[in-house]
Length: 212
Ligand SMILES: Nc1ncnc2c1ncn2[C@@H]1O[C@H](COP(=O)(O)OP(=O)(O)O)[C@@H](O)[C@H]1O
Ligand SMILES: [Mg+2]
Image 1 (tube, rainbow, N blue to C red):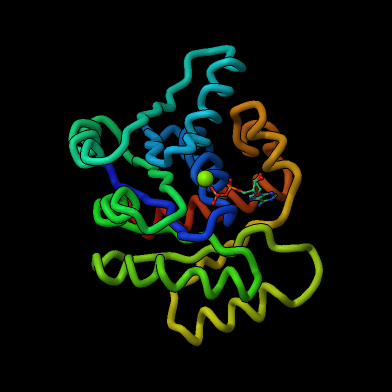
Image 2 (cartoon, helix red, strand yellow; image 1 turned 30 degrees about the horizontal axis):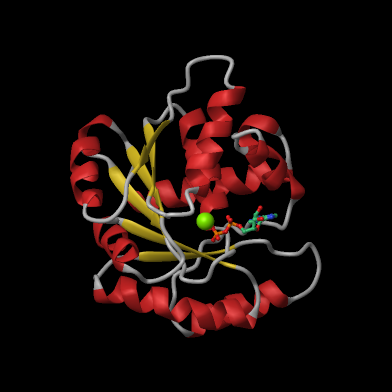
């Protein structure tokens, strides 16, 4: 079966695109799925994570990285589709051509947002892009603080805008940052942590939406 493509997109920088792309890729790899990650952000942070992963690896890694830009995205996807179950694309922060191509290629667009009004407002551009390309999207609340109502308020506003939102929320946790430094996901470094539970819940929800 041809790979399903998940594009992580959000025009606002710092929302958690690269973090979630890496964490989800690690979670699906651990489940035994054949996962490829595609970094089309010129900042290449996901590729940096993968390099750290290779440096820390003690055994062969089933996860595959592809680093491409511009017009080669569609061709790369065509080449990769038959060899993987899922391809995760980390996209650049602005609604540039690259981001548009990545959204167009996606079976599902995952849109991380931090629970703040600014993040909510900044999301509209990404939502419009997905709508224009007629792609399904799923918003996920990221960096949710342990206390306070911010996440509930934002969730209600997302619902009012009829934006599908993942039931899983991702907390603001140092475990995510620490695991990334080693090129790993929390499911690998702290498998029994709350952070790992959250990522597994999100990975399950997204996989279901992708029909895999
Ligand atoms: N759930 C989280 N908990 C703690 N820190 C996070 C979380 N998600 C992202 N971060 C941190 O926020 C910053 C921006 O995240 P990043 O994934 O690089 O966003 P983007 O790719 O959208 O620009 C990074 O320093 C990252 O470590
Ligand atoms: Mg990034």
